[in-house]
Structures are given as structure tokens and as C-alpha cells.
Image 1 (tube, one colour):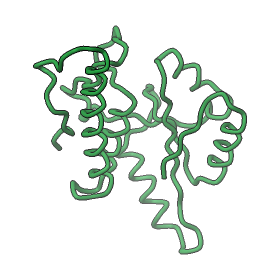
Image 2: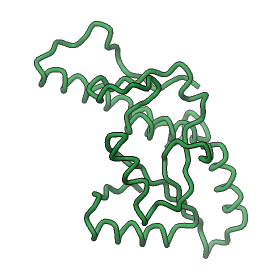
Image 3: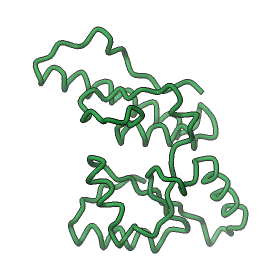
Amino acid sequence: CCMTLLYPYSEHLSKLERMIALSTHSFVLFPSSTAITATELSAIVSDVKEKDTEDSLSHTLVIVIDGTWREARRMRHHPVIKDLPEIQLCGDSLEGYKSKFVARQKSKIEERISTLEAVALLLLELAPSEASTEATTAQLLFENLDIVMKQLLLQMGLKEKTNLKRIKAPQR
């Protein structure tokens, strides 16, 4: 399930608080020195599923913050989510990966990627196999990013850059 909640609307923050309360585990997708990886998250979820009965199914919530880095850091410190553990992408997913989101604000830090790319890469990391729903969803996100980038370039009056190739999910 995916849901968009807008910050700082109080009714959205209340809904987020309820979602966190109902989940077995809640994480914020945000890089840090204390963040766990997708591999570690998979192990946690597997462990919970083994212990669950049919009456008590586990529910893991991953909160994704979207905004500039300055906005994201500010939102990360909001009381509703500030104490939640963080999950981050594995170094393997990011190694050699360059953001395809050409409209993204240029960052002084080369490795930064768009929120959409981070979600797609996280889904790939969590995917049990290339044929899984997570892997298929990630591929669709990458394909949609390609379409959005082409439309954005057209709206900006720019021709498609010759080096802007079709965006594909990184190979495993």
C-alpha cells in the first residue's frame, strides 16, 4: 500500500501517527550512520513473519520523505517520526549509479538521487527475485521516470539530450 501524506497538515500527521501505531515496525528511508540496510530489514520482517500467527500478521511501514535535502532534514526531526529508526540503500545499489532525474536540483554531493529513484532502488533491494512484485514495481518506476523526464524537457523547451538514454533499473 502506498499513501501520500502532506507535511505539515495536522490531519495527515494524525493519520501518520495512527499508521505508525498500527505497524509492527516503522522506518524512515533516510541515510545516516545508524540506518539499517534493506538486507537487515528483510531479516527483521522474515523473523517477525515466522513468529506471527494467522491472527497477527506483521505490518512494516517505510516512510519516505520527499523534498529538498534541507526540507527533508527538517521533516526528519518532526516529533512524529524523529525517534523512528532509519533505513538506507545498500552501497551496492548506489555504486556507479548516477541519478537520471535531470530536473532535480543540482547537489554539491554527487551521489544524491531523487526520491523516486531511492524508492525504486529500495524495492529492488527488498525484492526476493527479479520476477517479484517489488522488482516489477521498481522497473515500472524507472520507466515512468523516463517518461516524466522526457515530458519535462519538452515543457522546458529543451530537446531531449543525446546522452539521456532510456532509464532502466540497474541490473542485479
